[in-house]
Amino acid sequence: MSARFTIRKLGSQGDGIAETESGDLFIPFTLPGETVTAARERDRATLMAVLEASPLRIEPACRHFTECGGCALQHFEAEAYRQWKREKVVHALKGKGIECEIIGELVACAPQSRRRVVLAARRTETGMLLGFNRHLSPEIISISECPISLPEIVAALGQLRALAELICATTKSFRMAVTVTGSGLDIAVHDSGKLGEHQRRIASNFVIAQGFARLSIDDEIVIEPRKPVVMFGSVAVALPPGAFLQATEAAERSMAEIVGGHLKRAKKVADLFAGCGSFALRLAAKSEVHAVEGDAAALSALDRGSRFATGIKRVTGERRDLFRRPLTFKELNTFDGLVFDPPRAGAEDQSKQIARSDVPFVAAVSCNPVTLARDLRILIDGGYALKSVTPIDQFLWSSHVEAVALLEKPKRRR
Image (spheres, rainbow, N blue to C red):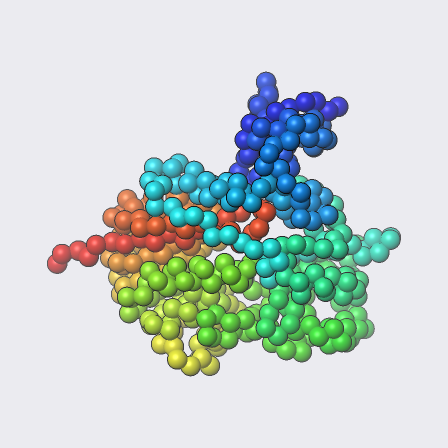
């Protein structure tokens, strides 16, 4: 049964929140000030109708909005949306008692710029489904457009659906990560089942015919007509299957420019959680870089990229699980600049070591404002001064926001 609700504010995931006698009720695709009818189930509700719309409500950019689960905020006016994302960072920092005057304006994300998407696929009686999961549901919504993705991905949806049909060896759903590279589409599939030799040959011929760069299944390369290559500054890097890559090239470039500007005076830089080298190989244009990463394939790609590059300084690599064994403050004291870009969980233990170190210039990059605020609090309590925080939007119309924080520590008098 539906009921009438008034939306008070947006929650951290972009859902509208209505106050009720039994507590907050989360209603997706609504905006503050709206009066709506919704069907309630515990603390969540499904929107039925908007009775009184917010003046900030706009026409969504995609026909699949509210169904596919890929976007949460296409209905939110652009400037208000950007302010809401910036406020997520402000709120997280305030929660740790960190002053907010140092927070810059959000670096916006353009439509049709996302170079990597993870699609869901499943074979049904009526054919192969390929798209995104409905919001908070395992149901796959087949898509025919996607205004956040690069046109190369959208144009290939039909071919990707056909490839999913060829490689499917399971009755369950499986994932297909598609990345636009300089060599073509890199397709990394997981959980599609074990391919027979006949299936493998057919799929390989299809990949060649469509001009795809590579197909891998569960990190095993099935066929690689061309190595998938991306540029990190002036350095070409061949990505390993399923490698982490920032979702948009523009966001990656913005973050690298902010970090590079902060560390420009550093002669020797540590890049922690270095991945395939998106920061390290750019920083190497001016500084010696020591890249530390737990994933062997990513570190190997970074190493190969640096070895074949010209015009960069020395780059060394170290495979190390920084969650289990963070670099100690004594090890860090050999550097005069540092950048760290951990997963969503942040880098609490590593931050404690950085806080004890004498590294004068530190850049913290994060995809989670809450764990960033926690780690920054540790650094500030260890004597670092927070100079700026720049929010960056690279997951357009989602609730996610990146941030780059820059810190300095005065040199100790000897």
